[in-house]
Amino acid sequence: MCCIIPTGLALPHNYNIALHNWELSINVRLPLKMESREKYSKDTYYVLGQTISHEEDLLHEFKGHRNISIHDIPSHALASAGAKERTRNAVSVSIGGMLNSGHGGTIYLGVADNGQVKGMTLTRYQKDHIEVSLSWTLGRYTPPVPESRYSVIFVPVISNKNQTLPQKIDEFVDPKRRSQLHHVAQSNYCWCDTDAKARKDIGKLPMAYVVEIHVHPWEPHRFKVSTDPLDTLSSFLPPLHLTEASACFFRQSCRQLRLCLEDVRRLLVHRVQEHYTLKVEALQNEYKALQCLAQKHSIKILPPVHHNTDDRGTKR
Ligand SMILES: [Zn+2]
Image (cartoon, rainbow, N blue to C red; front, side, top):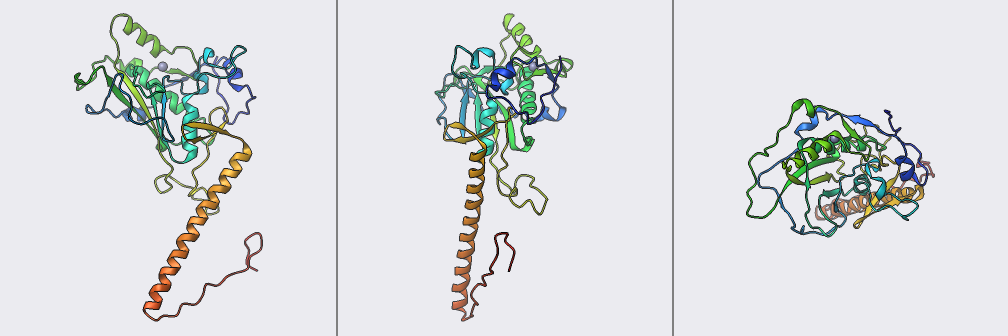
């Protein structure tokens, strides 16, 4: 059965269970333009068992799994009659929180909660799967997340410091197989996982990686902003995204807060107030500097003219 999940779907409170009962089979192929995304440097690597120097905080999150969307989470990790809450959060929740905070951040897949590098053995096909799954999931956010706001880097993991990283990763890749569709938004194994298992069974262990998902901070000058002259807010406020499960998350410290509509309203008011307070302060400082300059040159500056305005900002 093939089905598409509508964007902005209103989900029931126990949505994670309800979604899991759906028969989902969504097949996605890696677009050619994504193939150049992997950045691999022979000098960049992690050592198995090392502890990452920074802890989980506003900008860093560790994950031991690669369940990108809520649909990828296996049933044993979901809330059920026997368990009060989920034992695993989708990567998508952290991405949503980092996007909405405006600060961005990095999510490390293959690193335990205590910061110890475990690595994930991944074939080229499985790396494609992660990219496809990310693109599929973030494309279902409301609004969809543009590719310019995130990037993925597969950083190799070596077993000890004395091991030299090969110049080229020795792995057979069949271009025909690589163009096969990947099954995303489901917790069952994809063909790429079955292929990886078959390789392991004959002793061909793929390279281990830490997958770094970089969520770029909101910098209005870097990203495309609205060209609508009436849409003055979107040019400086980070856009708020709802995840593929129609939930709004906000990253605070090392965790995600789920925002309700009232929280979103308060957040927007706070951001607008903060923006204009800073702008007014900057203008006041500029005015003082001009006054000093005028005094120095004995030039008289007229005091600023205050216009009376009604509630709608119209001059009376
Ligand atoms: Zn796959």
